[in-house]
Amino acid sequence: MAVTAVEAWDERWATPEGRADWLAPHPAVAALVPVLMARGAEHVLDLGCGVGRHALLFAEHGFAVEAIDGAAAGLDFARREAAARGLRLSLSQADADTLPFADESFEYVLSWNVIFHGTMGDVGRRLAEIWRILKPGGLYQGTMLSKRDAQFGRGRAVAPDTFIRGRDANAHPHYYCDLAGLAALFAGFELLSLTQEEQRRPGSWHWHILAERR
Image 1 (cartoon, rainbow, N blue to C red):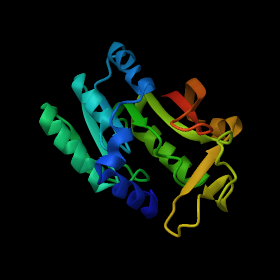
Image 2 (cartoon, helix red, strand yellow):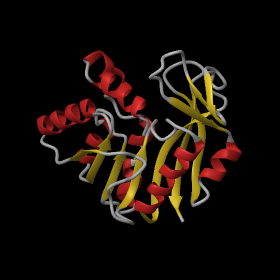
Image 3 (cartoon, rainbow, N blue to C red):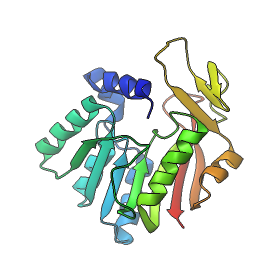
């Protein structure tokens, strides 16, 4: 993940105000818990866990949870929360581009609002890593920015469909995709569910994805 992206999130997670909107699990993720239990999933990975909202949710339901992020402040908060709730959770600082796990380690990988911070090539490498560590038939759940998003095309273009918002020299890139681009990126998966949803602010359109490793 780009250093600038990690630095931006690290700054956000360091304050209560920055964490405030990221403490409750997303309903789409929470809704998958019974599905995972019915499938007999045991080992799950929260890739880009932030302050741990989803990793803590999975730990509460008895899953063996690995959670990684590049931002130390988020990991520190998640570690404190896990201790306060008496939950077992493995947290580590790591890079989404090179995951520190063996092949076919997980039945489920979550990466919510994470892997699109970069170019299409970056996203492709991250998905290849996710495919590698998923067991055959394992589930991936995540999001991608849609070209329908109001921010698409704004800012400085740094690669095809990839823009840096604003004038800050330390800002990080965002990649946007349409249905064709999404299908190409997920060629190694079977798409089980695909919707476009607004997140947080009007015009903030994301693809919500549930896919199975072939």
